[in-house]
Image (cartoon, rainbow, N blue to C red; front, side):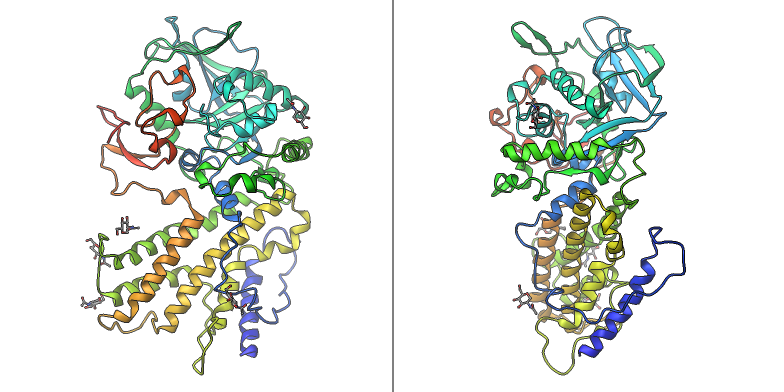
Length: 563
Ligand SMILES: *[C@@H]1O[C@H](CO)[C@@H](O)[C@H](O)[C@H]1NC(C)=O
Ligand SMILES: *[C@@H]1O[C@H](CO)[C@@H](O)[C@H](O)[C@H]1NC(C)=O
Ligand SMILES: *[C@@H]1O[C@H](CO)[C@@H](O)[C@H](O)[C@H]1NC(C)=O
Ligand SMILES: *[C@@H]1O[C@H](CO)[C@@H](O)[C@H](O)[C@H]1NC(C)=O
Ligand SMILES: *[C@@H]1O[C@H](CO)[C@@H](O)[C@H](O)[C@H]1NC(C)=O
């Protein structure tokens, strides 16, 4: 057996060596790495699931979702702060009620549908300005719905940066927040900050790196709007009357262009300088803060003094020598693409597998008692996922028991290491952030492979081969299929990729699937901006607490309230 294992290992290392020809190596003839002597079955144990304390899946999902509107609308309390650039030649938009170029910190939108909303004052004028960046802007990106003016955590990462604490009484004090962030960012020559709400925005500390391309006068849209202003008496809240639904849809539509990968690509992030609040080495105090909470409730408030200091120190490290070309990252590894490769390889296949396994549920639309057929379909999906990992020599022993399925360990190892083992030699050039990215990728890919290979190995042991003769009705498969369903539900729950949150049944032609986001929930109290919304004071706050996609009408009469 061991001799056989070492042959599998050698064969798999051959395959790995061909996959390892990355530009990182010096240009010379590829060489074979030393063969793996044997697979360590303790390390590649198909029964060992990840620790309950693991955060790798959360790092993975938040990083894979950066700049994507869908996921950041659902998980609106951001956990990543990432330096990035807005390249030269990018258009940014700004709407206002007079023709003045801002002299201090102000907002710009990446889509004119967003900025247009800000040019409806009491005055009859609506000035819409288009700017172009004349150099690459250095920005800091806050993920999540970091521009949603809510109590409950959306502003945490900004507030701890500006003030070392949250300031619920200043949720609406956007000008003050930006002023203090800009003050902080001066020492790093930051030009601004990027955030997301219904669409993405770039808050600039100074407009001098921009050149005006056009200024046009448009007809004001909607009823008069008054911005919040700071007075001697304190904050004078803005006044926003209920606006026509069609006007809001324009903005919802623009935001949705950035729903999925690559998301908002005018902002380019340098992942080698990413700071993640799921990094438990950097922010150990948050482990306790998150304990017992659902992912939707995770936030930064509650962080210790020591960890606030760590936040400042880490940002100081990553921003001190931050250039303005994100392609010149520490190692040259394209992490964003590598993460996307994993998501693409498994997202649809796992979803289809879950659907197939659902057929054993009497209430499922696809309920079937033909277990042979269900088993066959499921096994085909598992084969697809393991297409280049299922070694020819990995077969169950015919002469006895192998309770830990040691025979399948080489397949597990090959599947789990194929995207990352080639990076091993370059670890020394990785930044601290890259080591976190690597670990999250390894752990996440490993758990996918563990579950998929385990199911596949069980299927092989049960004699289900691609060419296997379909017997009827296959009652003996029912307990196996039930167990598989639990395993796949468990895996997909752990991964928790937002791409699996869909409208079921699919929306009609006159509708679109909408992930509810601030400020367009079913029950938005109007006027919504008079004060920040406190979810505890809303009767029907389920949609606010647990954003779940639903179909909304996009032809007149528009309606995001009730489908
Ligand atoms: C594999 O993991 C399971 C569950 O943690 C454990 O019971 C078993 O002993 C492990 N097997 C090996 C060979 O380490
Ligand atoms: C926040 O804490 C950092 C690190 O201790 C310190 O340098 C900074 O001055 C503090 N900022 C404020 C507004 O207190
Ligand atoms: C599985 O079936 C249940 C009903 O038993 C249904 O609610 C659920 O949406 C189905 N899931 C999939 C992925 O088809
Ligand atoms: C699932 O349901 C659809 C629609 O009822 C049907 O066409 C299909 O054959 C079913 N698949 C299985 C595996 O039963
Ligand atoms: C079960 O499915 C298989 C494959 O589609 C088919 O050949 C067989 O006739 C089905 N059995 C029953 C009882 O429907």
